[in-house]
Length: 217
Image 1 (cartoon, rainbow, N blue to C red):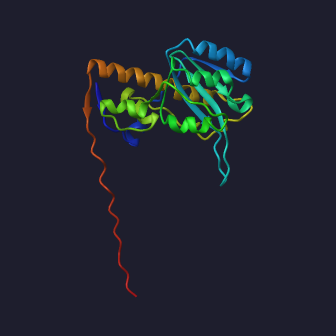
Image 2: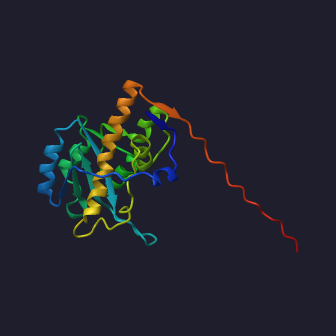
Image 3: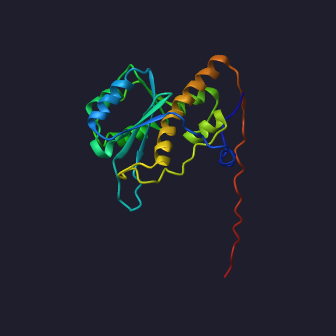
């Protein structure tokens, strides 16, 4: 298998889009959240991500609206804007038994702390994890493209995550972002174990020269 130390935007743009075929559960109440957590606690690892309503005005900010937790076959979308961060959810995030796998998790946890403080445990940061293979990509889209040759669409990123109902495109976008984290982790583990890959070093693009013409009065 060929992987690269970095993937360009142009390469990602030409790739086919990722499709999600798993189950999606939308969680709107604390009671639904408790039931979902009981199910998720059975798994050794979960993909994790968050979504926040975008801010378009200076000084405007919002709390995390959606927490996504995924297994290989299911993704639960916890609508925190409707019921907040519950104690069972916090206990899951703090559980040393269940690995939480994601990318840029420091930012996700910082935003989640605006709901309630907690101490996340057994966290796997993919930005660090993929470096063992020589991959320097930092975004989920580029890492996934590098390993699987498919593009994670970002078309819903700036949509309204506090809408009364999440659209089907929003649901699939959110599910893919969490589900893909598990797929990346498993692929990296496989390649590390087998050594069945070749790393291609892509040179950094040459800096663009800017000609500044001197003017005289």
